[in-house]
Image (tube, rainbow, N blue to C red; front, side):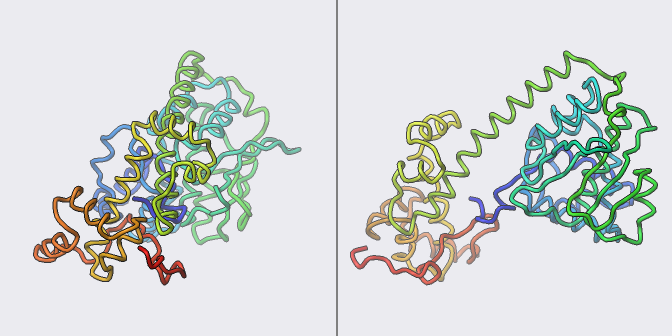
Length: 369
């Protein structure tokens, strides 16, 4: 189950995290231990296309700053960027005909890398500016994260264009830090501190220069891989959207598919099709979501059985009891006693966002329930 805040709903591709691991190891920091401390299993790096929650990524950067005592660690992370760690987006960049094509591809495909920022190319009198904009207006924190993005883009430019590449100007959100010299040495360009958003202003002639690494066939194949991945990501996302809609509607009774379809802004027929494409159905998600929450609530001693039934949209406690026995083989009371005897948790596990209780929702269940 996912939390209701946007940082928990959004995700980032894990594979670019290898750049962070390289930067930490170069500083003598145990990257695997730091990842575990952030709640991320390092073994996930062996899982193609693995994604982690955006709030977990934020914790990693916070821990990296603390472990290295370097608030500008993002620069070192960006300098470690390799195209092969960026899914098909990286291969598409490496095979692009020009830096303009590469940046345009990155702007179109940033959702492969993360759901928390987007790239945008803007025309200006002095040149073209690649701007990092934030989804929902929520900035990336800590500031080493956007630093890593800008430093990584410059690294990719130098890999394909040549080491002589330098932007005309770099804007960053942070105030001028003690490590300002490191920014100036890496970017080789004027730095605008305390800017509204991170960006790189580039010369048009640099972006139009033909690249020796260009490979049209590989570029097109990579574009197709990106499109396929985004399509699969969209199909998976509809599952998360439905679960969130179910959570919001449970206190009002059993959610109807038509109402949930309206919540996610599609027709019932479209919702049925998209869930089928994702390998599930509305009825299955309804049952699975109720089961997951029911088990968590049963572990929490501050929830009465009747209250759990209401929170999960059951009209009668008896209906909830039957469903709970079907899910677990025990009644809620039996499950709670067995869990307590084995020292089970009394609070919900991280990653589960409880439905608001009656007092939090400022409503009471109908007396008939």
